[in-house]
Image (cartoon, rainbow, N blue to C red; front, top):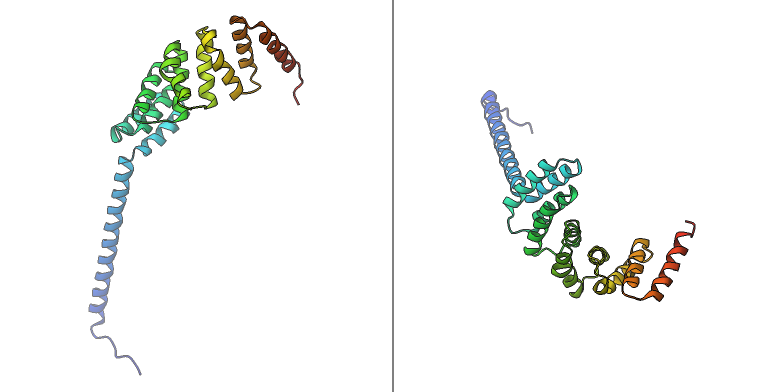
Length: 218
């Protein structure tokens, strides 16, 4: 059966075109609104700024990285992550005092990031604030069960640089246990033994160091 011809074809075409254009406009408006919403989400998400800060830090742009971190902190003032990244940026550029402040803020907000803790100790060591590195942070962390090799090593380093051999001896031993074969730590442990009067173990370790130094690499 043949379909009857459409009456007023131009009018029908105009109506169809108007509906199509209206639908397209509505879709475009919806997409624009969605795009604006996505942009707003990106602008309110501190991770957007932290990612850019990381990129700028790696490219050597300290001022730009700090500006991005500042934007992240404003959007997440009680989140420890922006403070950690702030510390990492300053640490990368050897801004030790600023790094200490930033890492402290991250820890105060609840961070237990091992990298932040390790870098905080090293920043304090660079500032020659050995006692603070040892007593305020390093030793309490170890006593609380933190056996991260990098943290133990930095605590040992703080004792070495403070020439606190008597108290530092067990921590230097622990650092070598956590980093076996480390010739630097072995040398510091030998010094610790000599400075605490244990010449026998100092000589034994001295011989061991000599053997390792003269062992050809595979």
